[in-house]
Length: 463
Image (cartoon, rainbow, N blue to C red; front, top):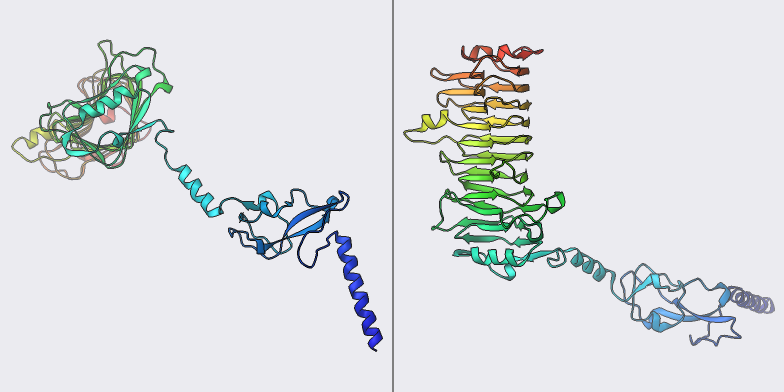
């Protein structure tokens, strides 16, 4: 029985040796590598223990094995100094070989942190000038000269203004020359405000007021004014666009401005164009307060809320596109409150052809005022009055004949008390080629002067 057991042990030992030979791996008892023999054998580093992803690899974690060169995995590392002291990039199990993909000189967590840092805004690489490197916001001292100097010395850059109040004693001016253009990016709570010495009605910013354009402006030469707060303090306009080609004003808040945005034309009626997006305006609450004045053609106004102006939008050019605009009249107390209200206008259209989509008059005495010869298109425009007000509630008023196109318009006259005259359409002169396709209002609330029925096509009045 003893002989059989001894034979079995010898047999098992022989089989184990044969298995190791077939695998091509001979490991010495003291973990020292055996010399490569005749160029057929190579040293390979193998994991002696399991290693977690992110852990640093020590000498206790590795061993050297000698293998046939023909069966060594591609990329397997053969020297411990290439492995020890580095970090595992993934889970490594005992017996695994090491390759460059499985190890790193830095912990994976550090690499992620470094990646996040790389994604942070780099002002210099982005072409930004960080204003706080040159001046700090100060609610007591004038910043106008310092800001103007930054503009003049940094053409073709964007000035970034961090949060804080920047006081101005005079307007900030930019160049109309495309080679000197400057854009502005304001943090959400970066605020510009006029000083006490301010000249009434001057703007905080004059875009394109300096120099002359050296070439015909194009879409790639646009100027951007983005973010922040422009506080007119009931004394200043916010932005004049005088030149500079295409200008984009977006995501800004304008408050207490006599005029919010004024796009000016030259003597020939030419001038810059603007795209205003998601910029809300609160006026100064005075009779000369206007939310937006567009003297030029082909501007766009989109997604705006405008309040506390006597006239909300004033168009003097053509081809302007207005979408999702919401003027709100703010009632004023005082002896002339009634007179002030009856002269209030949400949209004054002094052009010949402009385009309106989902524009909404809230409480202004007149929703849409059209000069003689106006042929603008009004699509899904609405007028609402939900308090009594004074004098008149007019949805559309034309100086002369009615030549415009109105489609799917609504007028809710709300409280109808004695002394208030309500009209869907008033004209200065009979006739015209205008049409009203789909009008919703209560016919029994309009005055005898209302002539909307004379221009209705297809759809009747909804009573």
